[in-house]
Image (cartoon, rainbow, N blue to C red; front, side, top):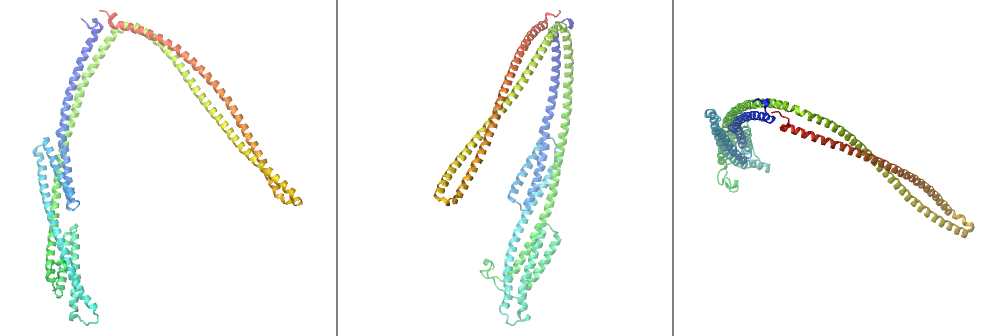
Length: 549
């Protein structure tokens, strides 16, 4: 049996089956692509990411250790930086274990990193021990230097006392050979000894601040020789062969000879200074080794990170290819599905085209009628909208006119209030005028010929008369304003009546527009009924009434 001889519903069923098969093929291709992508993405988000991210965090942790170690060496917030150092060490170990557990890189690839980290940890431990030794030497030297300075101050004060003794008795005869030379040597030797020691401390500070070690050490040796000569010259005078008293230097050297104590403390402080310098130079040497090892460790960590990034890049490229292949696997069956669906639809359309033509013609005629009715309805609605706008405009005009009328009446009220004030003034003036006139009359009668003295009263009466005249003119002006405001109010009221008439006319237009809309709605209803009848005809055709067996 040919496809053309089958009923319409069977033809459509065959088309749906074909389309369904193609859809299943698309789904299978898409599922395979998604599975492949899922595996690649799992690898990308799992071991590859753990390797790259772990190596990066390990490098950051090592760099953090370097910074914390540097601050510890420079005595910057030591306790906090020790805590940070411990945290960075734990984090670095954790991240490196994460790299190893990912399994992306072989042991041979990670061996240079492990070797560099071992060297780094060894040099870091050596640096910490050297720094501890340096700090201990520094503390010992500082303590001994302070003690030596205290001893030197006592001896220097004793030497200065020799000069003070001469100043206290200037009349006492003394010559250079008879004791002045010894007194001068005792005083001057103490000062030169202090200068020599302070010079040593200055160049020691320069050396530990990073200046040229050879130059600073030579300056220290020269200053020490100068110090030693000055001290020996001072002690040779015999002035300092006295014993320390119990109340001097907290009794630390009670009963000991000052010269012996000075020589012994000088020997101790020079020895501790040399140890301090040696420990500092050793610290710098160890720090250079540590910096080199740290740099190598960071480089090896970054190499691992770079290899991991390359691996991630390879997986990303594989994901791109998998996406392309999956897209093609889905797109090709999808295009085939569209083509088959189009073919089936075309054949079905031809089968039902002839019976439906009559129904389509009916629908077309009905549609035209509906379009005409809708057009009329549109015009009616436009008329209603226009009338509504005019009504709104007229209402706004009425509102404005009413507002002006209110203002005019308000002005009239103000004018009336002012007239009341003027009238009160006139009444006051009139009262005063009458009183003055009465007084003038009485006084004139009493005075007789002497009435001329009442000229002042007469002048006051005249002034009040002028005020009365001014008030009268003011009343006339206010009355004119009142009249003007009244006229304006009458005109505004007339306009309001006119506006009301216009609003009434607009309302009538709206009513007519509504009637036209009602008629148009009736036409649309009839068209809908005819369209429904045509739809019934189409339904009968689709169910097979016109299909040939």
